[in-house]
Image 1 (tube, rainbow over the protein chains, first blue to last red):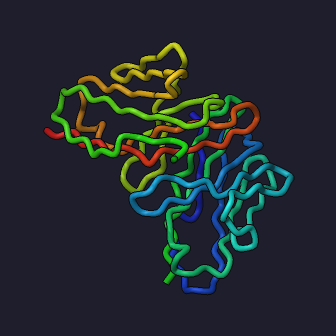
Image 2: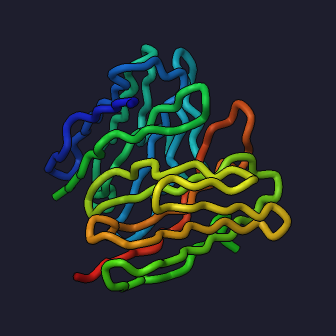
Length: 114
Length: 112
């Protein structure tokens, strides 16, 4: 089956620092990747859609200058949380889409900002 | 109104029981429908797609009613390993747009 990896799986950082999260599709090419955020006991909320070679499309209420997305190749998308603050602490999950429309999720990155 | 609404749960059922989850979606133009399961502190994993004619995968049966904008998941002969949160997921736009909208999930605990 389709495998998506994320790195790191967890990170703890100080307020004000930037954190980069990588999402890779390991056995298929993904023209589209998605970034989600999930707070405790809540559902996944789509943050942005990342298309290879073009700018990401952000959902309403998500600051594009704060959450930088780069989708440089068909197998790699990165999310950088800039100047992270405690309210950015969350579970960040990426997914990669195949042509059939199914999405396969990475294992997630748990971010804690102190 | 939320785009995807699910039974609030939680559902606590004995092993071997049959349990059903319901879901409604607001966008009548939605094209694709899925059930995902999510274990605690893990990523969602695709359980099954939902087709117009209804579909079955082992102990799991999914139904779609487009007229009522309603989706269901039936789990027969529940196992302890079925304990998880079940997410009703809809692709509201279809076509080349593959964004998914997630319901808030229904928690299932299967008891020994």
